[in-house]
Length: 177
Ligand SMILES: Cc1cc2nc3c(=O)[nH]c(=O)nc-3n(C[C@H](O)[C@H](O)[C@H](O)COP(=O)(O)O)c2cc1C
Image (cartoon, rainbow, N blue to C red; front, side, top):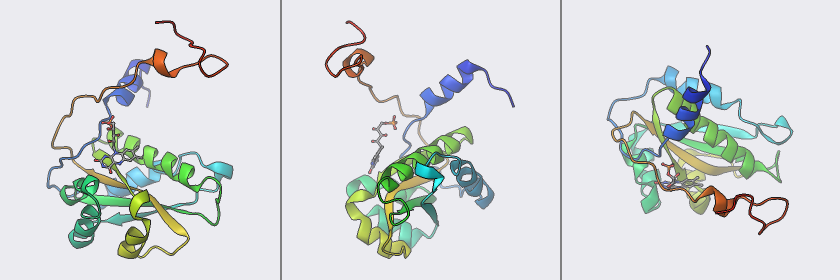
């Protein structure tokens, strides 16, 4: 497969957080394809400390969705993916590794026509561990709500580049405004 650079850039720019989903189930082979691709995310020492718990059970998804108001999209998505990392194998960087693989999940899903939103898991780690049976050393870092998009949100605003880029030293602007 060959892609034009413009198509690849367009792909990055068109990912949005999706919080409204069609009720259609996502076939298992598509869920597994997303996770198969996500395995190629980078991780410290290539330790790949992550595991994925695919939550289709509406009761468990509902309980995850009611942990905090920001988790509500999980009640509307047919699938939630709890991304958890083994902190004992990657003590320094398990959260970063987990963030990388979560982003890969979201990009792979976008490439396959699925919508996602990252649901914060760090505020409720123990409840999430209990709900999906994770051992104590597997820390949930994110839950991805996954399904077919039922909305087309406008892009959220981004800070201007000149405000966030410095040259050699913090405070020295690389781009003059
Ligand atoms: C670490 C992290 C936690 C987030 N937590 C939530 C959340 O709990 N609920 C939610 O609806 N969106 C959540 N989001 C999605 C952000 O709100 C979203 O990425 C941001 O507003 C930019 O919008 P975009 O993804 O459409 O570009 C989270 C994103 C990140 C990276």
